[in-house]
Image (tube, rainbow, N blue to C red):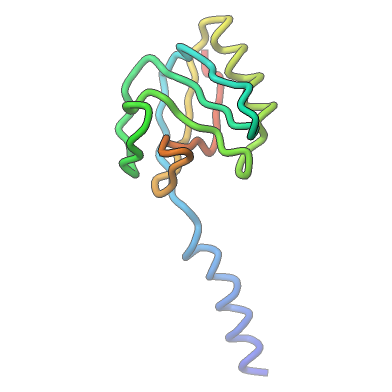
Length: 113
């Protein structure tokens, strides 16, 4: 019984140990949307250079990737196209320890105004 309790606690807390951290960046404008890749990849460019938490080398700190394994490409593409067309600012969260195609990779996006 004691082993089952200890194992349950270890499994519960293991998710916290391996959960990836992220950085939030706000007041960005979408400069370009790069879509249509055979693999379903999506990238976008913003107007400001972002401090890259994981030193991903591609894109010069201004092009961010959307990993189709981690996010809904259609939803992100819709928000990016809206923000670009309406000249709205966005906020994004980028993973601190991941790259996608050597670009920073987003966790979440929001249209802020």
